[in-house]
Length: 282
Length: 231
Image (cartoon, rainbow over the protein chains, first blue to last red):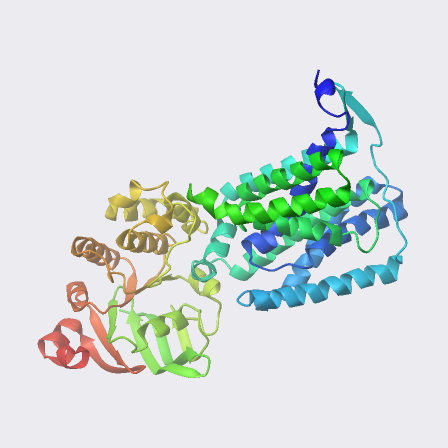
């Protein structure tokens, strides 16, 4: 029944929304919550993808690489927060410069190691199923499930003692400090989790994309669009923005070329950002 | 009585501007010490330095443990509870979440927190409310309950009755008196009525230095406070 109404690959719209959620959730932590203008976010996606590739080269298993990728990205994220970003929380514009510089170093470093030639990470489940006439590639279904699990995990974590402490440390770092929990630890943890989620996104997206040192850049703009449109710091807003932008891009791609679809989505983002205060007021 | 807090020759300020100069003081166990002074005397700056929020020279110890140059988190865990003058709540967190947060390090203090909530029954009716939307007086009450929930040996409060209605002020003063039975209290206060009601020892600060000390009641009766605070 649905197959007669919806295009046979209409599940790709859902997968695109999941992709937007995956690439934006990490930025929700660093930019939305910690107020870091995180230009290196795309490179943590890149690190995750190349970790999956490297582990696949060593062991033959891309799946193992996907398990390891978030931990590698989180560890590198914690290290960069400790060394560079920690001193800049009161200077958001400086975080833009520092993270931009760091992104160039990481991207060039990866190019030096792996060259600019495209690489491929294997799809661990290269099969499709058909449900009510709609073709569903199983790996894209994994992306959707991963996005839902990650968002649900963060919502649940928000209610735990750890989640409340993190939210408190972000909302009023000075008060958090004098109440006995270190604002530095909370910030490092949050940034590392954000980088870990970005790394996982990169590893999961690698099998359905061609890998190159520019891999993270293509996601950076969309992740910023989603977080800004959803209002930085608002998870609910971010989810709605991912649905609006991912959904409209996915649907438009059925009807016009990708370039036009992207232009229209950017226009939608601009108009929606302009209208958001009015919608909130009402 | 033995010494709870000991501060020696503390000098601090913001950047290159020195605000507090060579301040020394002690708070005995079970004592209420009230720091009085006009605006700009350096009272809040002194408390911020003691809480680990500003760098300083000099030395600070609590129950014999050296707190000098430790972070705010470490100082708190030593038994030092600080209730700031402003921004004493976490925006976006409910009252209930504040209380969960404050007892994070000591589950055994639920009973104490329950007792503290008895002092401020109005908070019990607002568990689900965003703490940022509480009135000024209710935020001060929440700050006090949070501070006391960690079983501190010293509670340091910065103008807890500032900007609150007289009836709430009376409630706060009664609560502070009840607290003083079990913990030492260091309080900065501009309101002379509050300082007199607490009936403890007082220090007067002027331009970053301590210029008078003694019983608040005696300093008031002798006219010393009137002269120093222009009341």
